[in-house]
Length: 131
Image (cartoon, rainbow, N blue to C red; front, side, top):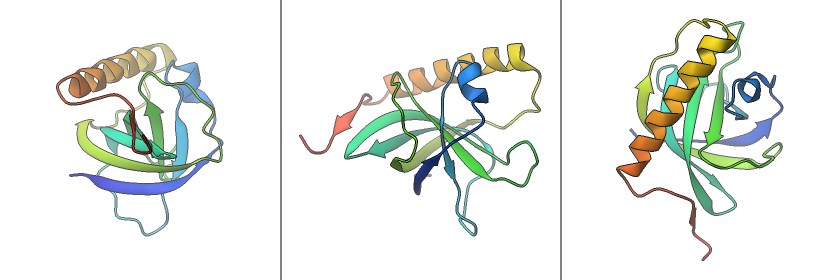
C-alpha cells in the first residue's frame, strides 16, 4: 500500500491521550486520495527521523472532519505545529462505533500490541537519516 501524507500537527480534543494513546492530529487535505477509514501501521518522519506508528484515519465525531491521528510507538513528545510525513503500510482493522471510554481504551491497547508485533517482525525503531 505505502500511501504517503504530509501536514502540520493541529490541536485535537485530547480524547486519545485520555484513552492512553496520545496522538498527533494531522488534517487530511481536501481532495486527497485516502484509503478506507480505519487503523493502520505506518511510519512517521519528523526532522529526518522515522518512527514506527499506529495511525487512525477517521471522519471525526460529526462525520465531516476527515483527519489522521498518528501515535509514535514508544515515543512521547510535543508535536503540535510540527510537519510530519506519514506513510501507511497496512490496515489492521476497520473503525468501530465508539463503545465507551473503558472499552475503547482496551481496544486501543490491543491495537498498540498488534502494531508492536507487526514492527517486531520487521526492522523497527527510530531511524535517523541524518546520521
